[in-house]
Length: 258
Length: 215
Image 1 (tube, each protein chain N blue to C red):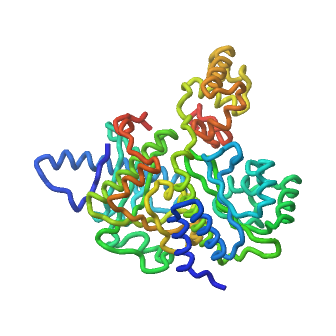
Image 2 (spheres, rainbow over the protein chains, first blue to last red):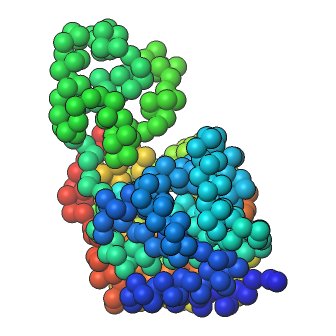
Image 3 (cartoon, helix red, strand yellow):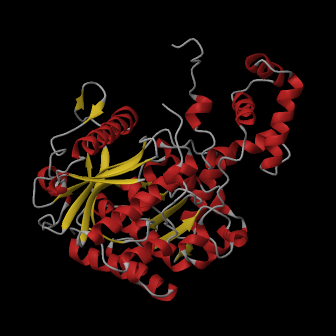
């Protein structure tokens, strides 16, 4: 069966325009069926039990599996979610190993999901600046396979659907506090070399300051982010744009003008 | 500061020469920033002029530009608007992204080359981006435009929707040259500024006077 573009467009619009969460779930279930899937899940990759109202977490997964999943806070380590953080766009689950190496625990979790009624699926990564990463997933019962003819529309519809959910929850509530630009230039310099694996003594030689000064800058940087170990600065400073991944892991020495 | 460059509305006057020189400087800064973003960073295969400027066949007198610059004239962010009644990117190259004929009319413009300067840090980028989005909406309302169309890589689509304006897909996305592209329409009316504000998108006044370190 070929996708009916007009029907799908109409279903997407119903999801976009839903005035209440109840309408939204209903419209989303209809869209999911229209796309030839059984289940949908739109979620920020957080533990919904601690994130409360400030996260998108909507699905029609079988209750037993959803309970187990929430009880064990699987949303923050789900291999599908992890793969979505590195995939450039929507991906069928069959291609998950293009993006991450599955651990034994991941395989166990996927098998467990299948035994609870979640077979194959298609996941669309949602990355919005200043927000926790999220995704929109369409999944189906075991035994059915994802038909690639529907995926182009699933990808665009999933993005509109996620935006609809954000609107209903109140987009502004989802914003992470802006942490950027709180470090001094010297704190930043010291931290950058620390993240590149240099010891305090090595950093002191590179920056031509004393080892004590390096330690002090890094301690002060920790204080500004309210953490007590330097390793805990890595994730937030990458997330808020203080550092870029390439600055830390892909650098070349430019001090000789090369 | 926001500069609107629209060759079709440029008037000649006693100080047209001096203004013209400043405008040229601003356009050059924008073309250089576009080269830095679209060619050097995103590796788009688009023409480069004099090794420094990204300029294509749509940078003609029909194009309108919204350019955010600091008080020294350094480029912060910019966008190009192409009238859909003249050749534009969606109508010329990507009709296949539209299920029907691409939207066309005197009040429909295509947003292209949305460009945030690479020298901005994360918080400045966000301020520049939000300011430019607000400027695009204000400009549309001032010029009686009622619809924008745009081609976007799907990974960026979620961000475009997050601005809060009313968007609709124009057709099925397609993988083109290794990028998943989709076409959307953006409806602009008197309620659009409120929609942006509700989504937390506001112009930043402080950014518009700050100076950038020189490149």
